[in-house]
Picture 1 (cartoon, rainbow, N blue to C red):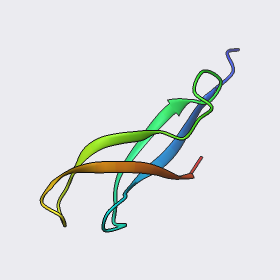
Picture 2: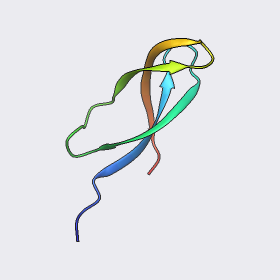
Picture 3: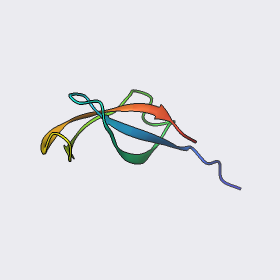
Length: 56
């Protein structure tokens, strides 16, 4: 059986702090927190989104 190295986390807008996205990453290869440029509906523009919590 293969090990499940993927972890689920959410992305939070760094400007308005709204939690907009849920994604997953390989926690063995990527140990740092991610910052992605995503569209925020509240700000109505593309803003940096930070990883906020591992959900699974």
